[in-house]
Length: 203
Image 1 (cartoon, one colour):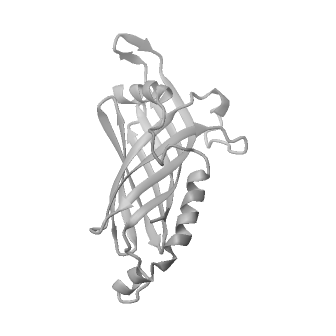
Image 2: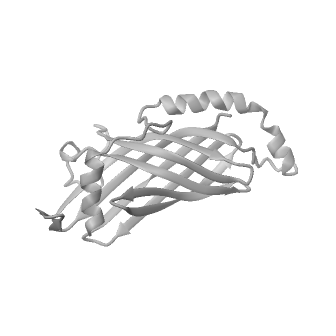
Image 3: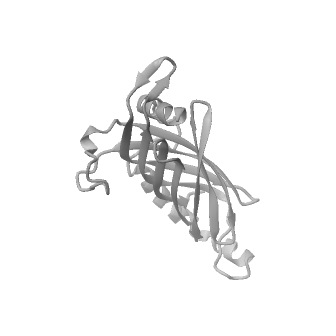
């Protein structure tokens, strides 16, 4: 239970890391699009796989992470501070930056800052988006590419503990698209996160 309360306390006070993955704007995606043009010569990667069309060209990828989160915690006490049961919902978006090496291993980071979308309604109609605490999250990314399949984990560190959310998707040429959907914990103390990760080869 402690980790979910610490998540609310720490996320509400945190700021994104200083990296290519620290922006919730579309600028990161724009950079990736520009890099995609530079990567137009990736035919060599397809030839390495017998003309199958599978691209395993290593390099740097930039893109965007979009997620919906819900943190629920029961009443309790942490570090001498008592609190009531509560929950915090939000949409968050930010940049993604990772490297794919020659062994097809993925290492990188992603940042995610909450925002309010006036056109989006939570599935739970009792949630008022305007009353939710703002937050940021910073993930480390690790994974790998096998043929056209991309898999890995988003790792969020909170209070010295790690929350690992698996993601899976595909690579099509310069483009990587993956999704994730996990519930960590149980009914009264849990962290739900779902969304997408998209990125494009830049160099």
